[in-house]
Length: 291
Image (cartoon, rainbow, N blue to C red; front, side):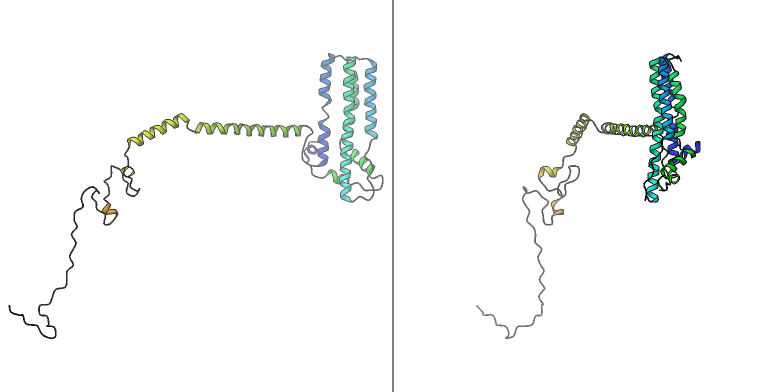
């Protein structure tokens, strides 16, 4: 039975669905026992009502069968339709088994005793066995589907893979996981702004630091070039010696514009020396006239 419950097939899924509803009448019995005070005696009409409903549901569970498959179906279509109809008949048998439990609980509360509910439970639990996918149940359902000559591949359909899920429990677990993930995301989103606010400097401190840095900048050295209106390449701090313009701009005097400029001595170009024994020009020299 445990292997059938853990089996990831369609038959295992149906087994889990049926066995999930087997202990359902026990909580109902406990609640009704508390309401009626634990007494068993009840009026006869309540016991008759609960018993008649339980017998009728048991007979319906024995007689109801899947409808025959239409003719001319392919093998794949037969597998799909056989599985779908067997699921429907299993759900109907579970509902027929739980109906006497509800009716018996109401009759017990109305009569003030537990006899109507006990009579209903005695006939309701066997119906859950009829709803389980046993060999007898599957064989009867397959023969009912093949009444019109179309072959029903019900065993192949029940051997198909299916997720391991429990009714109601799996859905509630998925919702709880989704809720937990959403709560974790909201908590992380709420913590992110706190981290940002904690890492940032408060405005007051920023202003104080800014004022202090400004004061330090005022107390610090003031570039002379900014006051003189010189370009950045000529501006230097007062701690460093001022660069002479003559070193930067060739031909520019290092003295201030207000002081007079000294005359510059121009170098004389040396002429080539005359030859002492120069040849006389043609035509001879003219004699000097005497006064």
